[in-house]
Length: 263
Image (tube, rainbow, N blue to C red; front, side, top):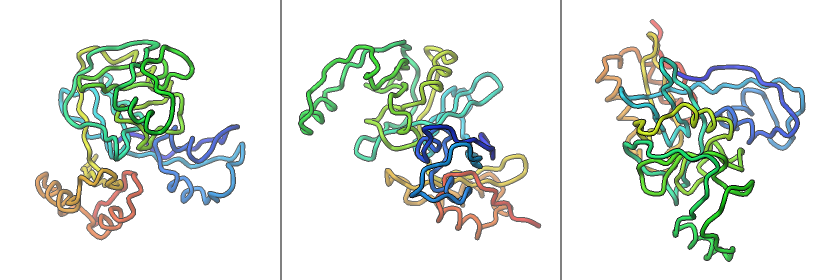
């Protein structure tokens, strides 16, 4: 489990979208927890309750675990797991799934624009850019971590409010300060995996937690049965409050919720 329930003071320039992006929690959750009016701007100085609890599913030997459906990246830093909200590919430009390794790290990268994005620019009537040197306009930001997938990497962004959304052409976007922290710690050759898991159930310290997200890529039509099979396979199906589980899966709030059946 990563994250928790915390408090945050609204700063100048904050919006629901930017706070959601920074902490990896949904705008609907912020509104509900803090009884906010979506139509009104956030009040500077107001205290907000932040709930960004997530279940981190990390295989042995993996240093970077990405769950596209969670829009979260987990980095195993020694005995500690660091959790970072990310932006992932849209449904039309999905982030590829599978095992990978880190093959290159580059500071102040030049963006060699993929031909597919050049074609999109042309179709949209925009000037076609083939190569963009380091600059404040470069969408890769200040750091580029190339992965073993073709044309795929983890990088910063010049649009921080796009984080924790399906917003990219497949790459993994991070907040500038988050990608700087990852860039400093991750080594070339590090092993990773990208999964798409909208629904996760786990037994953590004797309690059962469930986290459910919308199936944006439409690749998990049988999530309910997967939850049942997993809990049975790991021997804790009798500890699950199934009515609560159904409710969490229906609400899809994207938070780890305690669904332990009480005695």
